[in-house]
Picture 1 (cartoon, rainbow, N blue to C red):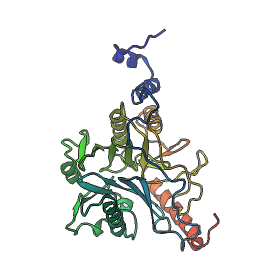
Picture 2: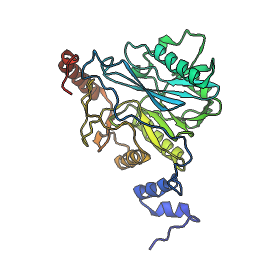
Picture 3: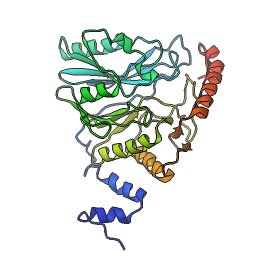
Picture 4: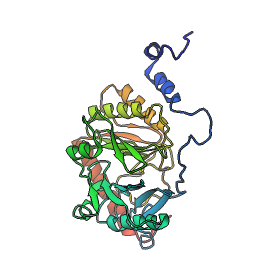
Length: 337
């Protein structure tokens, strides 16, 4: 019988299979008592807007207060089928918007609205505004032009040199950066693979890990397989020993039925999977990549699917998206709930 002790951890992990080792590692990110873990609590909504059933009635943005200093925005599917989630996080000195949405939108108005209401709530007159990104795909940067010429905005482009400079990342992608908002510091972890500029943001105050399009309930598109494998290992290592209340991404594409997704192009999703995921999902993804041994493979799990990208896959996606939108758009004003 193998006796596990804390005095010989390397010996233990060499003796155990990779999945078993991951299970033991996950124990060290827990706390002794179920007492809230010392993080600021927050609330997620029972339901997000998702493109209907009547697009005339649905707002273009849902503004959700996770807590008094952190807000989650969702763009309506009536505006763009991607329905991305954006984040607004306040510190004492700065507030940052993470991503600028998809398609033709008015995110600058919405960001200003959230900040103005927060200032009124706090009895303040000003705070320095920032705009940053999880990565550089079009559905996360479409509103950038609304901010680039504003003198009151500290705008961080999504190219790697700008990201390194803004977050003090000395070596890309292996160094961990920081974003100091004043009394609130976000860890910035490079995780390229979906895109070459992917980063994750960890907020110690709430225990939230904002992971972009690298992990969410849906299709995990992998553009650079080798980088993706290394990035998942990096974020697993980073989160070991840390409190992770929720892992939150930028999309929902899964239905509430296990192993069943909405097809690409679906702008109305009345029976969505829950938005938040856990570190268990991250470990499940990590274990799968180890098992695939470097071979890009589409693989469906209960709550997400690994989707390696290539020319044939992109053609498949384009065909499916067009067929889905052609079928649904004529019904957008009066859909079946």
